[in-house]
Structure formats: structure tokens, C-alpha cells
Amino acid sequence: MLIYHLSIKNFRGIRALDWHLNGRVLCLIGPNDSTKTTVLDAIELVLLPRYSTTITDADFYNGDPTIPIVIEATVGDLPLELIVEPEKFGLCLRGYDKTKGILEDPVDGVERVLTVRFEIGKDLEPAWTVVKQGMPTPKRIGWQDRERLSVSRLGDDVERHLTWARGSALTKLTAKNTTAAQTFAKVTREAKKIVAESKMEELNAAAVAAKTSAALFGAGFDDLKPGLDLTGFSLGTSVLGLHEDAVPVRLWGLGTKRLAALAIQQSGVGQNSILLVDELELGLEPHRIRLLLERLKAAPDGSDRKDGQVIFTTHSPTTAMTLPIDQLRFVRSNGGTTIVEKVRPECGDDLQSVARTHAHAFLGRKLIVCEGATEVGLCRGLAETWAQAHAGRHPSLVGCVLLNGGGRTKAPSVALELKRVGYHAAFLGDSDKPLKPTAAELTAKEVKVFQWEGNVSTEERIAADLPLDALQKLLDAAIEQFGAATVLSHVSHFGGVNVTAAGEHLAAWIKPEFPETAVRDAIGKAAKNGKIGNNEGWFKNVTMGTGLGKIVAATIHNIPDSPLAKKLSQVAEWIYA
Image 1 (cartoon, rainbow, N blue to C red):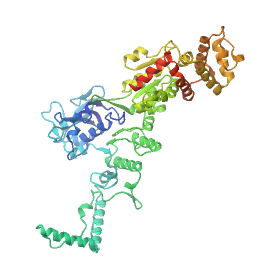
Image 2: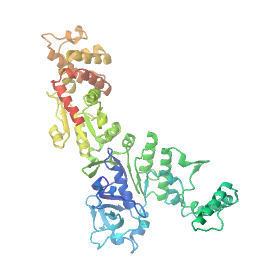
Image 3: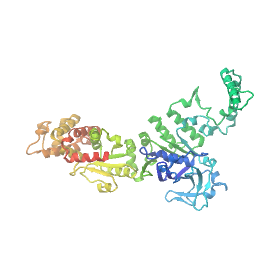
């Protein structure tokens, strides 16, 4: 089974959703209240084999039951018994093309699909039908036929699937097993015999009192005694469950129970089923999340899944890091309209890199794509200063995440794609070389661009604006990390003046032939381009960059009118807006 298209109208927080799923393994990522769980609930509502449903006015969008809830799921890989028998749904078949979408007739070369609709209005009477344009009236589809669509949901009732409860995965595994049914019958007879032969004096006394009380109200019985009610102990109830030795599996940890229930559901409904899971990582350590994802992605022979479908939500960086980028779906809700986006193929490599190194960023709301590690560290070093200026709220508490965009040629494209799939995205980086896409192109697509005034790098802007005492601390940090000889040789090279003999204090370097502006320029260029082994720059890792940020944070209040302070103030305003 495979859901190709999902339409939701007026269900809980979703006024409208129109989603072409396009995939067998789909992970929904989005902030809280982005309606991820509501999407799963809608699929469950339209396709699960319910006898009825418990919809209230609160389930309607904005609590308004005068506008009906309508959920449509277009499903392919259909079981033959639903479409070949004349009395079933063969005449309701439609087509689905990945480019053209839903076609009213199943022409050659496209997938044959059925569109199942769930609708409920203010009378709270649910209706499940199969719809197609041109049909005089939609055709009703009962719960038995919806059961053939093989949809299952792992939700809050995980323990039920570890017992032989009605409709549980274990029951589906054994419902056709007559030997199992005979065994259960024998167990109930033996249990009844044991109860009947027991004295149970207190229970017998209670039974006599019950008989007397019942007679007073006109309900006469010849005799009452305690006995085993067989209707509470049979195949299809939750009295029997899985045990390990004498311990019920339902008493194990949450993660273990969920894994067991998932495995049983896949066995009970088959590999071709549609499996829905909310917060897949719940109760699981990262290594077990990875293993579970590998199992869900794969066919029994170990190749990529070719049957069925798995749709799940996550708040785990491990999940985002483990999955291929084309299996992630980014969910956003705006004014009641829910949009589900995927990364474009041409951006796949860049965003896959982000997923591998900054998977936590996908769980944020506002993403600052930094040109490199220097800018990431700079912002980290300033985070506490920004928090103090905003009632103690750390940037992370408003959903702001920093990520290394991988350089000038890559970071702008990353920011642009993150914006397209629904994030508030900004770019922070140098202004000494043009960007691609350009700053104007990013701005046109509502990506906020922060570049330094004066066509300079981050290091050059900092070196130009810091007070001399703070600039000395910057120099000292580099000397402590790389040694005086290396750092001073860099400054000498880029300044065109040998400062080694003057020592480590930059005040001694300032002379008429090497004025302060030239000293600052040389330090900025050396900090950006100085050779360290096979690498360039003094602050090109997050640790050194964070130290640089703390130096800036300690003195920025002293230079409020500097280009550096003004630009960083704009960054803070964007974070807290």
C-alpha cells in the first residue's frame, strides 16, 4: 500500500493541506504546533478500519462545526480484492502520475489508485466513501474494506499490541490459528474449574448479600456465587499477553515495548502495510534509533523498501542525521495552511551535509547560516550578552540555531533552500567577495543577509573596530594557540613591516611608518589568511571562534557606533523579532 496524495480540510489546526507524498519512507520534521501529529491523525481517521469515531466540536478548525471536516487519501498498490470484484471499487479507480498528479481515469502507464474520503459535519455523523469525479454519488467503504488497506498506527496504546486484545497486532497474527483458539478455550475451562472449586468465603458472603439486596429491588435469584466470566477471557481480549519468563512484556521499558510493538505490527499487517508512528525516537537511545531506521528503510532482503510505506514524526537529531535527505519532509503551518516540503534534488548534497553535521538545526525555527566556523563561534561567544539584553532569554530559547554553511560558495545556497522548505533563514558572512546566489537574490527570497560594512572579512571588521586593549587580547589568544613566532610572522607578512623585534605588544608596533590603521589591517588579514600547517586563519574552528566572540562581547558596549556593533545588533534584533 502507498499513499500518493493527502488532502485535509478543517481538521483541528489544519484549515487546508494539499500534499503529494512521493516516497515510501517519510520523516516529518517541524517545530511544535506545526501540525505534524495532526497529519498522522488525519491519515488514521480516513484509512484505519474504525467502526465509528469520537469527533467533537473541538476537532473542527477553529472549533467551528458548521464547516465540515473532509480528509481524502489517494492510495495505490491496491489489493486485488478491492478492485477486481464488480461489487467492490473497480469502477471507482483513478490514475496517479508523479508529474500530473491525480487523473480521473487510470490510463496506461500510470498507477491505479482509489481516493478514500472521510467527511463529518455538525451532526457528527462520520461517512467513509470512495470518490471520483463523474460518479453520481460517492460509494461507501466499510471498515472491513478499509482494513484491507493495511494501515496501522503506533500510538499511546503500545501495550495493547503486546496482548491478544481485540484488533491488536498479536491478534492479527493468531486470529486464523485454530490451534491457538483451542488452547485459549482449554485455559478458560480450567480456570473456571479452579474458581468453582475454591472456597472463597469472603466472595461467597458478598454473593449472598448481593442476592438479598437484589431481591429487595424485585430481582430474585435462586442462588448467586462467584464464578469466572468466560467473556472476559478469550481470544480477542487483553487478558493474555506476551511474557518473558514470568514478567509481562508490557512492564518493560518504553523503548523496548515500542520496538516490540512495531515489529509485531509489521508482521501482523505485512510488509506492504502503511505504518504511522508519532515521535519514532521515544524511549530509544541513538544507537537503537539508527537500527530501527535501517530496518524500516529496508526490504526483507536488505535492499531499499519497495513495498508499503512508513510515515513518522521526529524531534531527534539522530533521526535527521541517519536518513537520506530525500526522506525528510519539512512541515510548517501558517494561518491554518499546512505545507509539507522536501529538499530539491539539486540542493540535496549541500543539505545532506547539513544533516550529517548540524542535524539539530532542522529542529530549530530561526537558522543563521554562517559562512564558516569563525562566524559560528563569534555568535556563540555573544549569546550570553544577547540573552542579558533580552530578559535572560538565550537565543536557543527562541529557536535560533547556528550552523556552518561551508564557505562563501555553499552557504548562500544552503540558506536559500532552508528558507524555501519553511525555516526563517539568515546568512552571516564576509563582504570581501561576491556571494552566489547574490545578496540581492537572497533578500528577494526573504533570506536575511548580514554582511560587514566595507568589503571586509569578519576578522578584518573585528580588527578594525575593537579597542586596542581588546585587539591585544585577540592577538594574545592567537599567540597562546599557535606561538608568537608564527603569529608575528603572519602580521609582518601582511603588514609589510617586521614586527618580531618589537615583541608581542601591538602598541609598540604603531609608528609613523606603520600607523594604527595599517596595524589593524595587518592583524585582520593575518587572522583570516595566516598559514597554520595546511590551513588558513587563526579562528577557523568553533572553539577559537567562540573565544573571539567572547572578546568582542566583553567590549562591544564600548563601541556602540562602530560598524561591527551595529551589524551584530541587527543580528540580535532578527533573532528576537
